[in-house]
Image 1: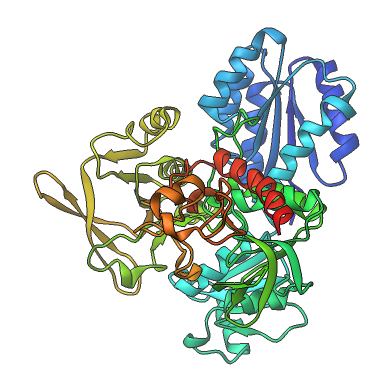
Image 2: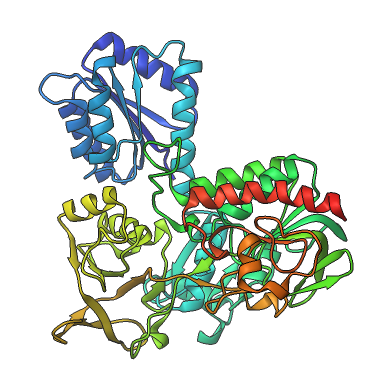
Length: 550
């Protein structure tokens, strides 16, 4: 695979030479550095790179150029390099222009000139931007290969697991590629064996579970210690925050995750209201940073482990899997929520075959030039619609209510309405689905008139409701009728007899002493990334207080 390109643009020859020099000195061994003296020549260079199928990782441009400003050039550059990171070099007086560009064209960062010394002012910014780009573009020639067909629910599950765990892999479609059929023949595999997962120096995995794949890749699936101070179940924002604070404060900490780190937030194409990131950041980026941070402090991460029960054994709590268990002095439940299933004829049979609950940012590319339906009216649905609209011909956003403003942040509402290829249908619901082996058509119904319309579509992404998965906690942990965990002072009001200790429960403590809950799984939580991170951090303080009493 050819090197990705970094494009620098400035009409001042001396500045352009200096910028190109500083870029080549640090990044020249890994990237192709190209300079352009005007916006028009930059667009011509991008068109040539697109024709040659050469990826563009970063465009760094001056704002004040004759004929075409930097922001005007970047807006047009999206046609040729839709995934490139965008850096605007500005004068101090241009900061308002840069902030507007963040909202209007997705500018990633702006830097006030001059950038001397580059090692302190330029390179750290570009290091972060390129690291984000690399995480979003793992090598498609990775050693791991997945052979299947795109309408297979198991194939989708394995691809999603690998993507969300940052495992570079190559997808080979048996229906579309001769190489896929060749590999299937070599493996003497039938349709029931798909997907096949090829891992170097390992036996071919046939229709494997995520646990099988994790084991073959050497990902950690077993605990290293018999007893921990803190076991965190769930690696979403709350769980990862607790892992960072717990491990950094000396607690023997382990995180158990059944799928991949990040939770629902990890699948978000962009989280734009998280403090300290004016451009926003992807859920994958936030997750990767948090996992690295927790690992740096010594927290263990067990993947592909589905917790089936929680047991109290005197002063310790046992977290049990299908095969195996671990013990801890305290447990944090941070399992978050899952999207609620749509109840309409035909949907269940097509789940994983064109009907998906949630979506990774990387799922958008497979919908290129297709029509897509998104169901939901919260921020997750809005972000997904905007991400899919970058590739899809048309995105239909189906909303049961009468207004997006009732449940979606205003900044997202304005962007959704401004997108030319997003159609918002209020007061509408999915009434049915049909397809032969995969989704081929949906029936949409107007909730007032009952009028129905059939539309041909292969992709449906659902972002509705919040269903906590807490049945594994057993009857001792008090939950509401929907399964949300009751904690702290609410516990005494909810079920006064459920608390047996002489002391009152700590703020995030459940009805079982030493078992805490944080994030979306907790009753009356805010359902925001920032609040989940805050609760995860706070839970460690409460764990310390609990451990001091035992």
